[in-house]
Length: 175
Image 1 (cartoon, rainbow, N blue to C red):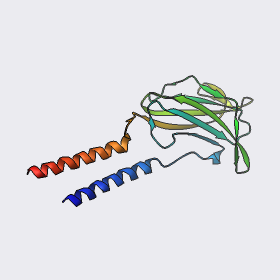
Image 2 (image 1 turned 45 degrees about the horizontal axis):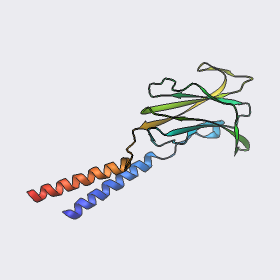
Image 3 (image 1 turned 180 degrees about the vertical axis):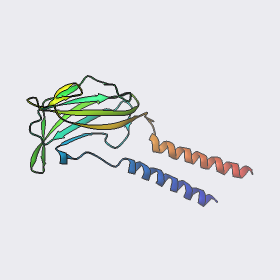
Image 4 (image 1 turned 90 degrees about the horizontal axis):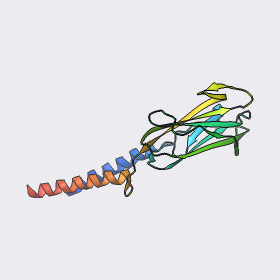
């Protein structure tokens, strides 16, 4: 009986860790369209109070600045529009030079966040989201979660399962 309980606990731990790994798979944008937005937490949950860096990349040579709109879980603008008009070179994609724009904030509200990047050509474009000269809009999102500082989510799940195992073993001894 003891062997089957250990086997069950090992199976549950492996299943939990596998599900966590699958959830963390990177599902980023592609520069195939000429525009990309991602974050340093893309595809994984963000602990409360963490610094989030959103990066906008483009192969469009006409884009001279990007305005970032950070929207909190209530879909309100969490910070004033953040403008980056100093692109950094970021290699090549499909024979075209890539330029990178960034925006960084520390977020302290739990829930689903979204960040829009408005790619702007200051000599041309249209109005979008109340911002002039927008050529293209791309967005990324992330989930802010409460932090369990000592052992984390996986550790909490394992501790609960071990507690259940000890409880079951003691109960069987009493019967």
